[in-house]
Amino acid sequence: MSSLFPLTQKERENRIVWASVRATLEAFRFKYKRNGKKSKSKWSFFERLLGIFVIVLKIIGLYKLGIENAKRIEVKTLSLVISGLPDHFNGYKILHLSDLHIDAIMGLEDIIIEKIKSLDYDLCVITGDFRKQTTGGFKQILPAIEKLQKAIKATYGTLAILGNHDTFRMVDRLEEFGIRFLVNETVAIEKEGQTIHITGTDDTFYYYSDEAINALENQTDGFKLALSHTSELSDVATKNGYQLYLCGHTHGGQICLPHGIPVIAHQKGGKKFIKGLWQVNGLKGYTNPGVGVSGIPLRYNCPPQIVLISLL
Ligand SMILES: [Fe+2]
Image (cartoon, rainbow, N blue to C red; front, side, top):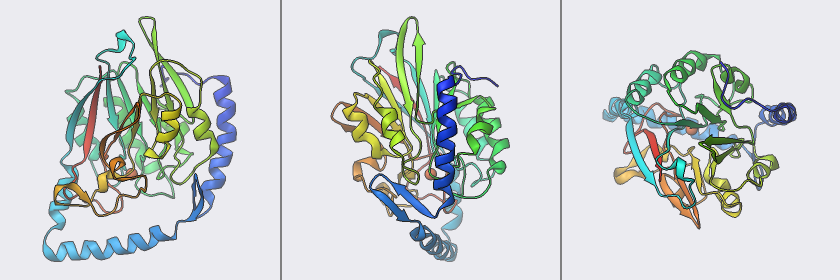
């Protein structure tokens, strides 16, 4: 299925170089961060802790509740006033999905489809983490993602970026379903002679490369939306005149204390980036707590979200 935003020859050439770099980064057990590489060994330790946590939850009778919570998806509607938004984009609606981890909960795609079927939106964006695991194959996600993409009725299609759980190998396969990935790329959306620009970066939580920053340093004017798996490039987006930044990754903590206080959020940028709306100078951002789960298929005090944004 073809996208409304076909790849340019230059993008095709760049992707060949990008894929070879990403393949190398994926082959090693390091997190490649903006400030250098770090070991992934803490994640294995974290997974062992989760195993103990699950046993405790089963003993105290809270495990089933966690599973039910993870399937109880909220639809969050937001109206964002954006200065400089072109007139014809007033009321433009973006469906924001993040952190599907679609193979972590059997049938999650059907719950999402049921939730979005009555929503109206112009564009869908998916900010990474299609898969449960961070390594291995991805064929297990294909039927669910294809089904979901068929149910997404967006006039301007679906744009997506990779998360730290994803592999470069899934891009071509998912694009066959009509999802257009933005791999450090920018697309222009035109409406009645007016244009907005959307730039998507590769994941920078595990697979940082300077190309992600370079992509945000493009010289486009007017309204600019950045899509990145984490909030960690918000400073770059601010410097480069972006008005909106959509991300995910944190799951809002996923396992939270009462009042949504996360136990762990897997990010160090500051509390304001853990979940929901934030602002850095002229840049508005939203950290989507995700529609899926990772690690364990449970949520407490942190409902999964589908986010519907109206630009005003
Ligand atoms: Fe995630």
